[in-house]
Image (cartoon, rainbow, N blue to C red; front, side, top):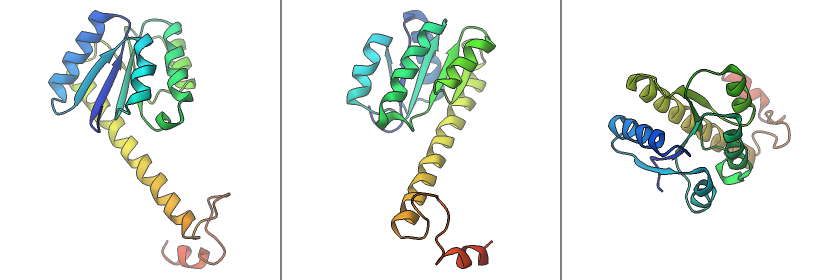
Length: 161
């Protein structure tokens, strides 16, 4: 999978196809792949999508999210959780285990597209912030441990605020 790729993980083949078709309709330029929970980790070990979408109908499926979040190279890849119906307890459990956003399977296409675009945009911004922080740390502008401007650069930083 390449940049601009979306991995849809679902053990319900029909739901997976429905979501894939909606995403294709909305984001035709993306590479979209649908896999089962069992296939997901092996696919993710060989690729890094721009977005992961996980369909869930029970608490058991949150295990795949936990497993994905243990893979260091995927810690910044956003995950959208797809639910049949709103279940606050399941949703909170999923957020506790690393999802970035959620949608209901029945949402209008415009809502699904908006959530996908916003999630990808946030991910890009977070990567840019991380890169800027790394550059500033490497240059000695920001202390690596605390993330605070070093004594030498503090006056310059405050001058620009």
